[in-house]
Amino acid sequence: MAQFAAESGRAATPAATGANPAPLGLSGFALTTFVLSTINAGWFPAASAEVVVALALFYGGLAQFMAGMWEFRAGNTFGATAFSSFGAFWLSYAAILIPGTGIVAGLGSALHSALGIYLLAWAIFTFLMFLGTFRLNVALMALFGFLTLTFLFLALGELIGSGFALIGGYLGIITALIAWYTALAGVLSAHNGIFSLPVWPRT
Picture (cartoon, one colour):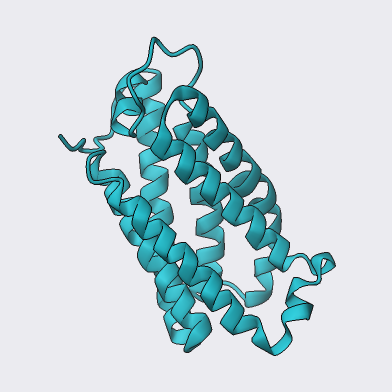
């Protein structure tokens, strides 16, 4: 666990007294992203997006946000910033989709342009986080690189046309698979499993 934590950007601290929260944060992000991305990619009807609200609230949102808070306590600035931010992203995305908030109804014809700006801003933030992975490991570099592209193409889909959103859906699926891989690598390293997965740490 200590080795994976260090490779994920955790600062040198005394012996850990709790579990590594990174696999939880990565898993919550991966599963929620995968479900939404399969819909964006056209694998399932657009109406299926309503099921994403529950995931965005509790797994991609709350669980990932909590993982970020635990990363603060563990001294991992990168993990704390990333997990807390993307947990908040999913919570905010759920708020947009919940009819009771009145956000979609209030935006009216400006919905697509507003979502485009929203997603573009997240693409910029994700790119900044991508720059922060250069001294961590290749798995995280790939994750944030593909996530940046995912947000960018989804933003273009809202601003220009649905063809870009379709590409963004497939990029999101790849992003989710990378996140699951990285999460599994952390779980296996935490309990000395019978095999391990490389994350290719940068030096």
